[in-house]
Structure formats: C-alpha cells, structure tokens
Length: 114
Length: 77
Image (cartoon, rainbow over all chains, first blue to last red; front, top):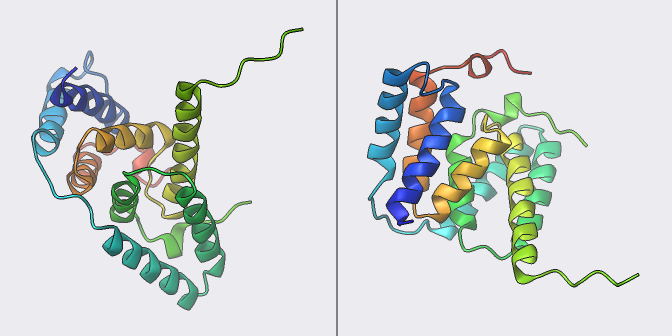
C-alpha cells in the first residue's frame, strides 16, 4: 500500500471516531469531513519537527505548572516524559508536538490520578 | 513441559509500540487534549506515515468544531 493510500485509510478511521457518524447513515457529511481532512493531510512534505523547540515548550509548560501551584501535574508529566525517552522512537518530537498543540487549559482542567 | 520460545523481533516491536501508546495516552490526558486511546493510535500511525503534526492538529480542531459530538460538548467527565 502506498503512503498516500495508508494516510487515506487512517484518515478515514480518524474521521469516523472523531465525528461519531457513520458513512452509511450520513454519507454527505462524512464525505465532506473526510475531504477536509485529506486535503490537509495528504501529499504535503514538511520539515521534521525541531526537537529543541518541543523540549523548550515542555520546559515552559513545566515552569508554568509549578508557578501556578500545579506541581502534581508538572511531576506527573515529567515522569511520563522520562518513561517515553527510554523507548527509542524517531517520531517522538512529532508526537509530543501534536499533543502540545491539542492541549486545552490543563492547569484548570487536568486531574492527576494515581 | 517445553519452555516458552523467546519473543520474536516482531513481538518486541509490538510491545514497544503498545508501551509508547500507553505513555502518550497518559501525557495526552495530563495535557487535556480530549484524545481517546483509539484516536491517539490513529494519530500515531498517521504521523509515522508522514503526516505533519501541525496539519493533523489543525484537522482535529476543525473536525471537532464542525462536527461536535456529545462527548466534545462538555458532557464528559
């Protein structure tokens, strides 16, 4: 399977689980959502994510959590990042970059559970 | 009783991939990204196949905005 075909199939699955509707019952909306996603994801070559920028963002977030008395959150995040670094994966900067971009007011909304 | 055979390279790779998803899911939860484990798995596969994280974040935000589901409208715990 070519890379574009793989991206197409994965985009299809992602659209289904984010939008919660099935192509059978809502064909037009589903097609629109899938076209929107594919336009943005397919066939774009991009420069690799700068791991130093990602690290700087994570350091900034750690500092922010501690300044705002969310040491629990800072410690929990640090622990997971240390665990993640134990497993070699060339995509780690890209994956962390995605999570940083989707982060939604963690200071106010995140709870740390054991 | 025969001793179990040692794990193959593929088994080791699969185990590492599962471990990465587990840790990323915990980070995603701490950062309040609203990604569930399945969505995260698709995102990981898309990135491993060359999708840009910026474009992917953009797509997810736009899909959530255009097609809000019950779980994305503040009803989730």
